[in-house]
Each structure stands twice: as structure tokens, then as C-alpha cells.
Image (cartoon, rainbow, N blue to C red):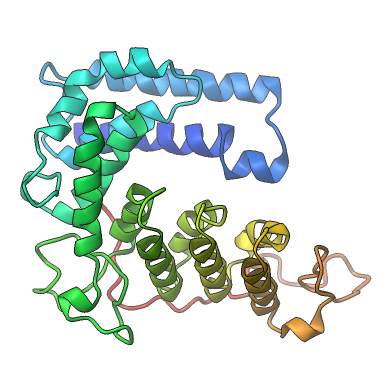
Length: 320
């Protein structure tokens, strides 16, 4: 494993473990972590950050690729229990290096894959929360909004790629294709901003028919915008992945009636029926089949997903 891969792996582990196990979906689904488990998770995070500190260069960068640097910073600032002021001071040079990449058009990148790197950089600056970076963040968010595939790029609402986000500088050359990873990071970068665009991004994620879209959609099921929540739930229903059932069921208690209706419809779609086949209340039964056999599937390797062969949309790419 080369140096870049190790740095990225360390940052991703810190980001996933930190936000997922301690504060995220796993904790919500299974209750609070035990003291012992939490201690082990925090110890692992400490080791990951120690490794990243060891690889930090004198100029505040970990790698020549600003996307890698942004990913590392996001993982560090999202680590639970961090002293934000002390961390901001410690990594000020790293944050300044990202800000220095800001372009007049609002993008934050050097040259390659500008949309992707801008989304990552914006997320890092948001996670750090320095007041002086707010103008840079807002310009970057406008840049991302302006470069989403929509009417401004000549993409109609009925188009295959409408609402998506490409890497940048390849969007037109490759036939205006979108990338699911760029779209996910754009959705994160636009959190608490541009609800109309976040709703469109949620819709586009659902259209990918790719299970990789489940996690970013679950993350916005509790978005501050009613329309974003509704679109995210509808998209999860379209994806047909059973891992989203907990998040969708939780939306049955949403304050907004349209969100609750979307949750009922999504659960019905996951179960392969219509909402008339279910008792529609907070205790919606996803598969109301009173089979006395707890394991009726003779297959020794059953697939718990009711849609074992989702239809990925050709052309949606993933990767750094």
C-alpha cells in the first residue's frame, strides 16, 4: 500500500468510525454504545489521528492532491469529543492551504476534478467552522449549485443525468455524465444550505439504483428541509434496500404529513406491495407474512435484500 493510500485509508477509517459508530447510524439503530465499546472506538480514533499527524508535512499538507488533504481534515474535525478551538489552531496551516486554492468562480481546487475537490474542501471548512472561512464556503456552495447537471448545462428534467454532479471539466466531454461519489460529497457540502438543490440531489441519488446511495440518503432523512426529507425517503424506496427500513420507519413520526405519506409509500415499495396492503400507522408492518417458520428460506446464503439485483444506471462512477 503506497503512502497516499495509507493516508486516505487512515482518514476514511477515522471519518467512518468516528461519525458512524459513535454519533451516527449504528448508535441510533442499536442504542448507545457500551462504555467499553466506546472506549475502544475512541482509542482507535486516537491511533488513526496519531498516524495522520505523523504524516503531516511542514506546509500543512498530507499529499499533493488537495482532495486527500480535505478528506483528512474532515475526519479530524468530525472526531467526537475534540476541542474545536485547539484543533483549529493546530491545523490552521492545513485549513489555510485549502482556502488558498479558492478560485474567483468559487471553486476550491488546483486543476483536476474541480467539482469533486470543491465538495470535499467545502465539507472540511464547514467541519472546522472558522468564521473567516464563511465567505469562501458560501462561494464554494454557489459554485457547486451552478455546476450541477440541470437546465443551465442544457440538461432537461427528463434527462438521464438531471440533478447529478460530475467530477468537473469532464462533464460535457463525457456526455454530461454524473458521478455518485461527487454527488454524495456535494450533498454533504450543501448541508444547511440550498434546500432546493439538496432535494434535487437526493432525487438523483435515488435514480442511480445503486446501493452506495443508501448511506448519504439516510443521512438526510432528518434534514431541516421538508422537501429534502421527502425526496430522500422517496429515493430510499426506489432503491429498494432493506437497510433503509429503520430510517424510513422513523419518518412515520415526522411532523410533516407529506413526509409521513412518503414513508408509508416507501415502506410499501420495499415490501413489494401497495400501501393498502399494510396497516398504515406508526407500526407499519413491512412484510406482514405470518409464517411460523423463522427461516423459511432453504438457501444457506440468503440475501436479506428484497431487491437482490438493483438496477445500477450505466455510467455512474465511483472512486477517488
